[in-house]
Length: 341
Ligand SMILES: O=c1ccn([C@@H]2O[C@H](COP(=O)(O)OP(=O)(O)O[C@H]3O[C@H](CO)[C@@H](O)[C@H](O)[C@H]3O)[C@@H](O)[C@H]2O)c(=O)[nH]1
Image 1 (spheres, rainbow, N blue to C red):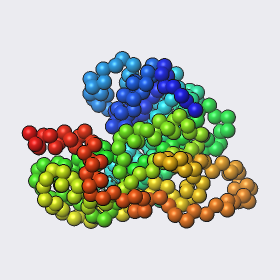
Image 2 (cartoon, rainbow, N blue to C red):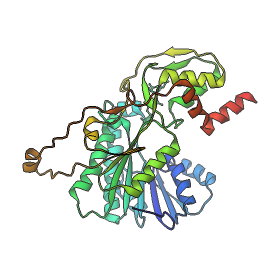
Image 3 (cartoon, rainbow, N blue to C red):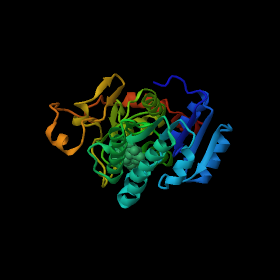
Image 4 (tube, rainbow, N blue to C red):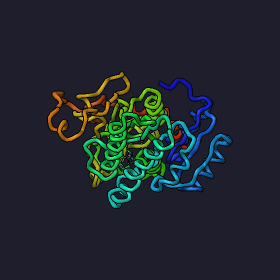
C-alpha cells in the first residue's frame, strides 16, 4: 500500500482532460515533486499551463500510439495514470481502427514502457461501456483491460503493478449530455432526449479521482476496481435540469442511437462471481488460473454469477435527488447564477 504521495514523480497520459486536470491538482496539493502530462494537443497544454501555475508540472507533447513518446515521458517516474483514450461513442463507431490504435495498442505501449522503465504502479482508466460491449469504444476498452490483466498474469515478477478502474458517466464531462441540455435550456429549444427510460450511472469527477487513487494505493496486479454508483433515467435528468432553471419540461424524443444501450453494466455476472465488496468499491481480481492450454481446459471454476450490476438495477435516483446532485456541480451553479443575473 502507498501511504504518501509527497516527493513522488507522476505521469498522467491524456492529462489535459477533466480527469487529468483534477488529478494534477490533487497530486500537487499532496506534495508530489513532479507531475508530467503527456498529450497530443499543445494548445490545451498551453491553456493548462496558464491555469495551473506550478513549475512541478511538466508537459510532454506526444501520442500513446508512439512507443517512444510514452517511454520518454515515463522515464524516471514512479506512478502512471493512463487516461488518454478515444472516448466518444460515435467517432469510435465511424473509425473503429482508430479506437483500436489508441485504446488497445496505445495502452499496450503504456504498459510496456512502464515495465521497462521500472514504474512502480500504473492505473488504466476504463468504462462501464467495456462490459458486455456493443460499441467500438467499449470493445476497445474491454481489450485494454485484457492487456492490463495479461501483463499481471504473464509476469509474476513484473516490476510494475498494473490495475484498472471502471466507472460510469461523469457528470458535466466534456461533450456529455448535461452541458448539452443546459445549452438547449438557455437557448429555449426543446431537450433532445434519445430515450426517456434509458438509464446511466451518475458520478462526480471527484468520485472518479477517488476511485483511481484507491486503486493506485491498494490495487494488486491485474485488479479491476469498480465504483458503485446510483443511476437515473435520462427523462428524469432532463426534468431535473428544467426544474432547476425554472422552465417547463419540453422534450424532443429522438430514439436510441447506433451503438447505445438502454442501460450500462459496471460489473458483469462473471465479475461479480469473483468480486470482493468493499462498500463503495468492488475489487475484481484477475483470473489467475494458469492459462497454459492443458490447465485452461482442465481447471474450471464452480462460481456462478446470477446477477450483474447495472444502471437499471442499482439505486434509482428520483428527480429531487438528481436536482441536488446537479446543484453540487460548480458549472451548473455558474449557469444558474448567469441566468439569475
Ligand atoms: O442529445 C442527447 C445526447 C445524449 N443523450 C442521452 O444521454 C445519456 C448520456 O449521454 P452522454 O452524456 O453522451 O454519455 P454516453 O454516451 O453514455 O457516454 C459517455 O459516458 C461514458 C461513460 O459511460 C464515457 O466513457 C464516454 O466518453 C461518454 O461519451 C445517453 O443515454 C444518451 O442517449 C440524450 O438523451 N440526448
